[in-house]
Length: 436
Ligand SMILES: C[S@@+](CC[C@H](N)C(=O)[O-])C[C@H]1O[C@@H](n2cnc3c(N)ncnc32)[C@H](O)[C@@H]1O
Image (cartoon, rainbow, N blue to C red; front, side):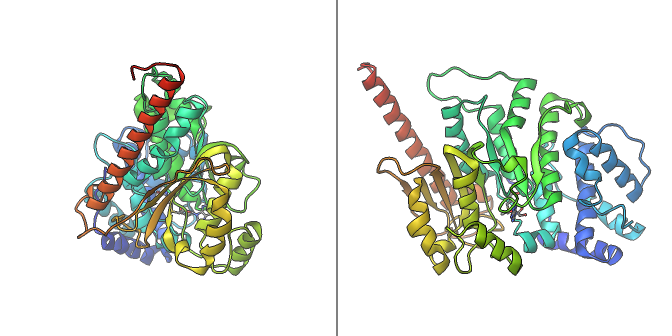
């Protein structure tokens, strides 16, 4: 699914118009986006009934009401996350926001409440998140491929009832939401019977299986909202009826440096999946702190993506856990990647190296690749490599159906089918069955 949006310049104009009132673009983007989030909750019947006055005061009341629905939504009424209570909005700015969302082509497809369009809208509205923290949405079709190569085999190996995954740079939650869907209805392979039930227990289990952490407290709150919106929608209830005891494992923290956040505990995850930031830290103090914490990969003008690989492979994953990332391929071409390639990565079990530099991934101007490793020393002598031959001849109308992306998916399908055939044949040979 690719969400429909207005042209990027339209979001920029809205932020600029509202900033004339708020005095800064960050608060303007947050006012604009919070209005979309509240609309989303009301349009989809997820918000509890509330008596709200019209205008910005009504928006603040609705946010307070949503924040009371579940402990994980409390940040929506926290001025430290959304500084709206301290910076009231005038009527001209409010009207601009209302008019904008009135003509937005799809706050969401009528049948789905996953909030993909909400996530995309935050990136488009907030240049502070885009430029300062490298927020760049991971399209759902890329998220699904990453999860097929990591969470799906982890579910097969550890079982759907026990499996746990994390995205330590979860942004607005595109990967976390796709993981929630996969954990709720795990793919069934071969002759194994469906191992898990459906209904409320499956939703609770899927929530427990998925974790996300991001530096951006509002993006993290949006991820929590989206996971709860999916849960409420599957159950056919409003957000306040999702049990408060059900876990929503999302936190705002610095994944690279925070060692007190419980979600960043060592050796807790069977799958770590991320589209980490590719930027070089701008603040010299942070750059040095990260360099000191990750000397094995943070060399020269390193990209933050490298310490994220080390975080996932050396800290977050269980032994043998799957680590999948869509990352910039700059480490292959620049000096800072030398130690990473020659000393660091060879210590781990590489499973897939996929050249996605020719694929058209909206917003990702930087050439990318997908790396999948297991957190253990190399096993066997096979690494599956999908090499790129050429780029898209033109920008595809639907990027999920681009020629290069479809060729990559076909190659993955063929390889997985072959691996399954081999595994079945080996099993039959070992059990003496000659009919397979
Ligand atoms: C490429 S975006 C990920 C987008 C996400 N997959 C999505 O689709 O919404 C990178 C994210 O990393 C986050 N980030 C940057 N530095 C971080 C850090 N030290 N700890 C946690 N998150 C960080 C940014 O805030 C941003 O949301």
